Amino acid sequence: MPEPANPQDGEVLVGMGFAPVNLNDLLVLQGLFPVHPKLPSPVGNEGVGRVLAVGRGVSGLAVGDVVVLPLYSLTWRERLNVPASQVVRVPAHADLEQLSMLRINAITAALLLSEYVRLKPGDWVLQNAGNSSVATTVTAIAKARGLRTINLVRRPELVDSVRAAGADASFVDNEDSLQQINSLVGERGIGLALDGVGGSAVGRLATALSAGGTIVSYGSLGGEMTSSANILHFIFKNLTYRGFYLDKPEYEPAVPGIIAEAAELVATGKLRVPVAAVYGIDDVGLAIAHVTRGGKALLKLGA
Image (cartoon, rainbow, N blue to C red; front, side, top):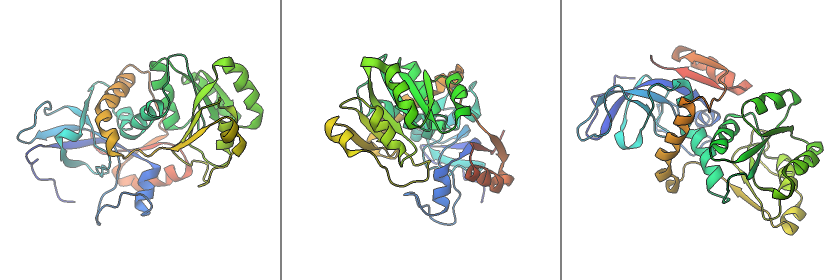
């Protein structure tokens, strides 16, 4: 690609630091995501970098500032110009690798906790895919807000590590754990369940939810594109089933505040999403293969 031009009015030139390789990036590559860039095009739905130059009319940003890039900025490249109004400045001393993952995980996690059920301190939130990046971020933000989380995982060896990462409780995602969950929450019950797996996992969330509770699905890590649950739970417990999609205009006003909240958790060490590997830009193919197999991978695009 050619070197970017000098930033225009209202723009900043950003030197990329890190960009995740996400599953939704791979869907873009396959033409299966709602975002369809004009070809030929780079890819990359989020990332973090430093301001290299500032265009006229830009205030509140200076050369050297660390910024989180706007969603769908096509971040798998070394430098790019972006509208200054769409970047969010974050603490320069925080871990850049962790900051690079805030634009999707943190916004998703915070909105899942605020947009569907009115939660108050002490309330329980149940979530599957409990060791995923989104679930790890939900756990950290929930703890900062005084909420308690129960994280369901698919393998017994993950239970202790998820608890160590901050979950108030963790169980294997199967029928045998439902009684333990009910005993743990007692009369307080569970009003919100978050689904990143799909399939029969939704049915177990419905069983554990209290009357009037809400399930919100945001992904299908289990590979099933349908969900199954006992309809009687929805009839007699009056449950609600919702879907979440990040890229909605009504969410945009909340983005800077959420990123600031999450960046502070990163800076203080209270939010840390495990990264399996970091690849250079020349090894993007290896990074894609890694994510396809499973595990969080980042591209290192600059200093």
